[in-house]
Image (cartoon, rainbow, N blue to C red; front, side, top):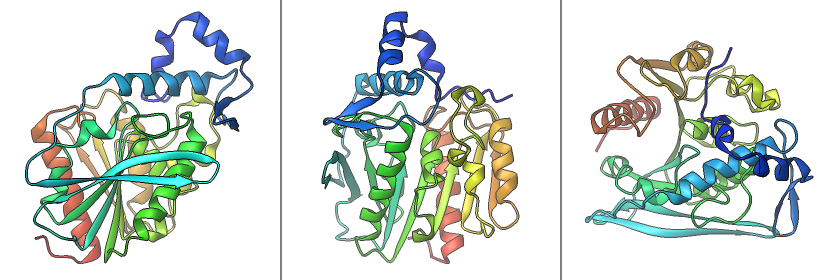
Length: 289
């Protein structure tokens, strides 16, 4: 039985009133449009995503760091929510040859990551990160399928910027979006999925097409899967089948001392980020700066 709690667990703490309101709603609304809920029953998907969005939006913004540029980005789409984010790069570097699209966890806003992602800028990457719809500066109602479709649009945006190589790194639910049926994975030179389950929890009643293991390609040479032995949010046992599925050509690394990404201390964060960068360099044949 799946024990991952990152998707639906917060819904338990919501009041009965909020649940009943979601049950009565036929769909979530955004700018007058109806966004499809593909998981669960009686609006539970909207309740869970709203809980994570509210938690993320209450979090404190991290400071910007001297020596880095944080360029605001905005993706405007006809009849669809505006997506906001930024590009993080070294201030002295005009344009890096490498681009990284970072997909965060579901209780995070991009402004909370400004000091964390400098690790990648120091190693020659321009880092692109966007708030999920309904989070931070992005419009819309957060739901699994619409967010998954948004990430595909963001991936196209990053890949259209003219970089020599582009990479994708998703943590927690970000790894689920990285492995979604909508993500153009072939457009990336390498992909890292960190602490994401092979399947969504059974009690979420999501379509199997959104299970990461359903979208592992026959040739997984450019895929890295990470798990943490001390991860209580997405236990390693829930990640391991995905790791085993990519091992034929890709790479599965289990860090016995790792907890959940970005919540287990600076040392572990640096170690797992180093693993990701080393995999990217090895897969693409690039030389670290």
